Image: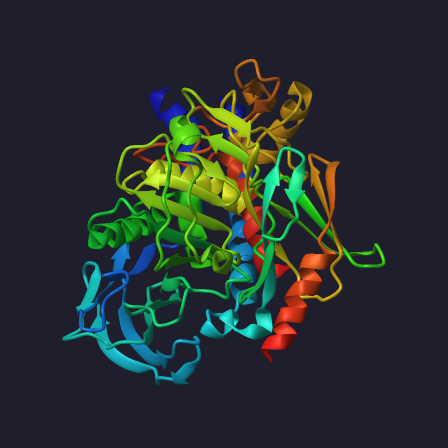
Length: 168
Length: 356
């Protein structure tokens, strides 16, 4: 009986130390995170953080780049990457200048555990964030590590910068 | 004999569990800094509150407010000075202070609760804007705390079917308080979230009527919402909701749906029911593509999980470790909580977003 008590005490102490260590790590992480987080400033939404957003249609084969495709400049940075649609942005030399993940706008999820549905949309409008660069030529779209679409957007990018230049 | 059992077995157990219980809690009291209305007009009085989520005493507290003026370009034209507006000494319950009037138009208001408890000193700083928000086509900050690049951002978008926008705004506040800050893991990270209200509407459609009604109509300033990891289109009518990209729809009162969808949009968590979207993320997944992978991961969560918790989601060929009421399995009116694998993923994403 005495030994059992000792064993249980040791077991409980080990559990306590493990739990306390885990909690300490988590609290230490939070301290680190809060120290690394700059306070909110409305200045975030200024031109110094601008990115481009491409609005265009898509069909079951991928993006459709036509006369309706548009690029606008918006204030704010790229969002934290999340999702399984990967966008690689290539420059005119074919080099990758940006790469990010996003939630797939070409997929619909109806999250109902009783009757859930996941489908791919056959046509619609898509908005893709792009870095603020004049040297964007091609987008490569990859889903689940499988590239499925490569599209030339150089003309839309050039038109945007040309129109912007004319505005000045 | 009984006394011996109590001394040798039960007492050590009780002591250890008591230590575990107290050590696993944030130092009490856990408090939430809030304001009401969430997005006041320039003439509306504002009530600030510091609400205790857990018991515990507060020795003293100060409330400071800074009021700045912004123009339609989003530039601060007059930076305010932080002013002490109220103090509390040994308050017994929740703290509350109501202004005598509004702050005027085109204002950004930042308030800071400086709280001293027996164990520590805490500061909570929150910024909101007055209504109408003057910055053209930009979402109005209604509860923002950190640099949007370091925290998770969510934009509430009113649906065109909403007949009373005061009800919508009230639900936005309730979503913050009753969903996000009511879930223990998100409450632990409560300073890492920013919330906005979009001035322009969108229109949600019913999943079962997409063929006739089309897809969700995004607000005309949708490109300006690109910075936000999550966008929620909140509507009044009952619809079969769906998500696409970072945009999801929900009835205004559905506290569970918004947390489930935020799990996807913010943290790249995947569904835990058969027929959902299943992906095994490279870092700290909540879905596994094989039983053996899920069983191996079962040992990564301390005493929370074991390999025996690995189960297949229906006949999907995908596996999970979370309990059956984990938020990534449920949606709807009431929220549940994220189980350990989801919590680990949330910790990872919040850390990665803030530090990298």
